[in-house]
Length: 421
Image (cartoon, rainbow, N blue to C red; front, side, top):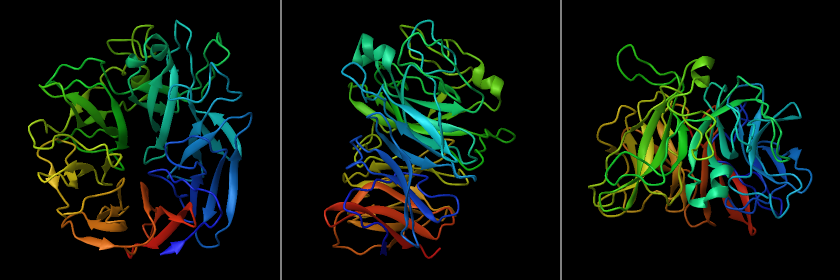
């Protein structure tokens, strides 16, 4: 185990794609915690020399954070950018933020925003966040909150999952001083409603998404969606209780598919959230309403993660004793497979090793590897040390190292360990 950073400040990793493609640098922001948004720089540190480089510094009282790296070279970074020159009417919030791409020192806006009706297809009407590149480095997934509906009634501003596709640019009319252009065509791929029918597959919230497989998955013989996203969706039980379940959406395979509207306008209306492209239908994978502890857990916060081969999607649920365990679900559905069985539960976000042979997470305050077949646990960090953050346990692309955050000297520092794989 090695401590990589030592500065008297906090260091924040994102929950995936925190390494450069050459496995030499860890990329981070400097927020004091994952829930805050007051960092002003995006930086990286070399895990061998410990050299720290500032990649971007936010201007005009804005803030930045939640950076991920494109898994394919050349090095490209995407992260959240808050509003420049914030004021009482327009400041950082879920529906007032955007994605930006940094490549070769040049910053480009990812998603356009148009909040003046009639809205622009391919543009959003609010804030995107937690941007994650697809395994082939072409698309970016994100979660989303809507300014237009938030202004009408915050209860209508339902979190959704969207995708940015490189078939822009998108340039709104600029009828509001806070509107902006974007390099990518952006749409929502989830469907939500503020009033899900109890016991149905309808959801009020879509979040914590993950790409399915490095090259998609096989749905039926001869049917192989090249890109798909899994995510958590909040259903209602027949008793009206919120139950988070696992969902999947197969995505278009052409530019024309991304631009073809379905039953409702891609860009939304004053009364409706932006809508899915034609043919994009969310499919429910888990049905846990009757379990003793129904639903996927939201604490610890985790993002659903597919194995590289797309055989399994990993998520966290409680067992019948109320202990948070790691479960594996096929992208075809069926009964979830419980992988861990310990009396001490999983305490963090999860990620697959690039080989697909194991997963990494925090258990009993230690970073561990979990064999994807047997569930056998191998600790990588010692017990009894200072607190380990549950926000991120991230493997290097070459699979040789794993990184996490841990308190040292009163600050959240970055640590790594060799995986032995």
